Amino acid sequence: MNLKNRLRIQSSHFQANHKEPNIAKTLSNQIIPWVPLKAKNYIAVFIGTDRSTGDALGPLAGTYFKAMNPRNMHVYGTIHEPIHAVNLKESLDNIYQNHDKPYLIAIDACLGKTSSVGSIIVENKPLKPGLALNKQLPRVGNMNITGVVNVSGFMEHTVLQNTRLSLVMDMAGEIAEILKQVDNQLTYSLHTHTQPADDII
Image (tube, rainbow, N blue to C red; front, side, top):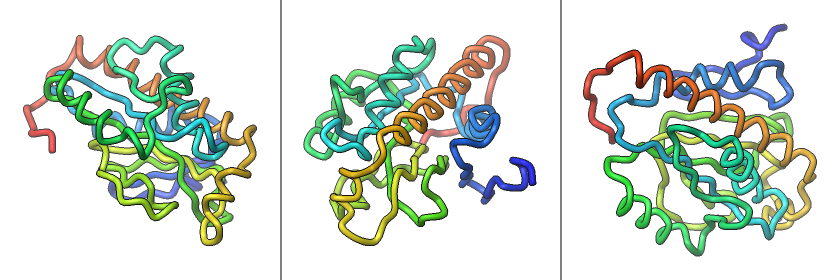
């Protein structure tokens, strides 16, 4: 069975294991049609903390992606400057104050079924951070990318603390590559195409 058959597809939800060949190209191709060319600023918001192995997925991916020097996306949330539950609202307020008409892509870790561990999920809707730990946090972004780092259902905080670092690093690298390919496509599209002015929600 090839990747096309293994990719779980809904109208605005795509999921595949991070070890699948060409996953970065496959998932970036799903994301690109969602991203409006009329946005004045593109923002990648990586959520998580370096104090928990599983929850470090976002900051690690942010660190990797920032090192790639994206041309079109501003990066918020790295290992050295993480965005987490405590400073999330302040960070979002700062983004909206400093960037006119931004389009936000939110990136975070999540927990799921055993069969889904290692999967990267892209969704064309805002992220609801903190669900695994039952935290009430503001929704983030216009679309989101999440990585299933471990199993949900029991002692979620401990599960996140005991997640394999190797898995988190591998998934973070793939997420950074997905965003790099989206950024590359934006560079091409912004110079060669125009797009109808649909409102950003």
